[in-house]
Image (cartoon, one colour):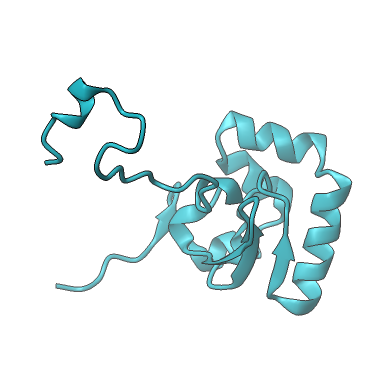
Length: 126
């Protein structure tokens, strides 16, 4: 069975890359379209300039939209503590960077700690 080719709202990746930003915005949901219509912030504009020059860029702009020109490129996004590498995939189009780089770690609790009540220390660790 052949692998299914990626499409976004009926457009192939090559078509999306050939579109202007305004044409791509028409395909996006209203929240993302509004962000593009209002214009990017200064920090996002600086990020785009650096990205178009270098390709691999570090950024704190977690609310930047994933655009077609970013697909299959590596972007380092700050999670509040360090920069996490993100390889942009086609299914990420129209989402924000922050959705893919989490800021909080998952907590896995072990046994009850010092100062725990008698009732909580009697509970099985399982």
